[in-house]
Image 1: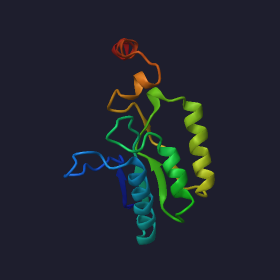
Image 2: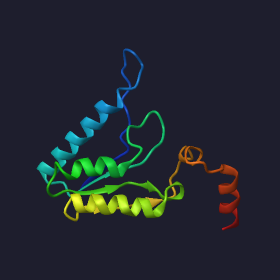
Image 3: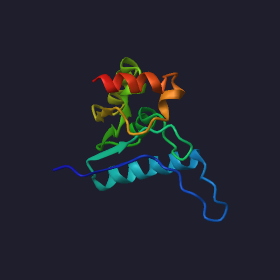
Length: 136
């Protein structure tokens, strides 16, 4: 059995100002959390991909590469990388780099995603995607 934690890197809302915390602050917190997970012996950390203003992580592989150089044992994975709006070759290459930096601890979990925010950002028409998915 393996024990791990996954998250999306959501930003906290300041109860006084009702504004999101700075993404830079949240990214630093996540790196510190991953370091602690590694130190206490958790087996896995996974980070999801989101392209919304309430999440700090739009590129899991970048965060995982940063975590790779400050950890020793914990497996580092995406939870999930949105394959339907990504270039699969580029995604593979990015995770191959994380795998090298982490000495073989990278894991890629790819899926279609459960939100549509990434499609327009990458130039995909939602109408075409809906038509294609209805045909399958």
